[in-house]
Image (cartoon, rainbow, N blue to C red):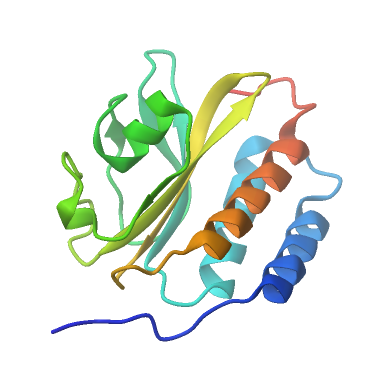
Length: 166
């Protein structure tokens, strides 16, 4: 069975979502609270998603699951492993049209077909990643990447003054 993208979000909708994210996170700088609320906002606002969440770097340098929406997730991801670990090591957004073709993909949810992962950097130190999965192959395009990177930036700005930045 071939699944195709059923809906699209335009630049105006991402601008509206960014405004909602800013309002939702305004006045709060707790990284866990803001990650929880932003994950819920994205999960319910964007079409064709099956997982949205955060992984944070722990004292060993691994990514450990944080707040998310969707099915239970992989708890720990080593640097360089899967899409999330690749984003961590490279410091670059990873947009994968078909996760089954991504060498080393970690199948936390076998229904996921495409994925976008944005590294979260504070003062040139990566503190985690924002991970979004879809059951639709080729779900994410350039516009989605720019929008998700904008949302990640809003998250980072909201926690910038928190004493426990990760």
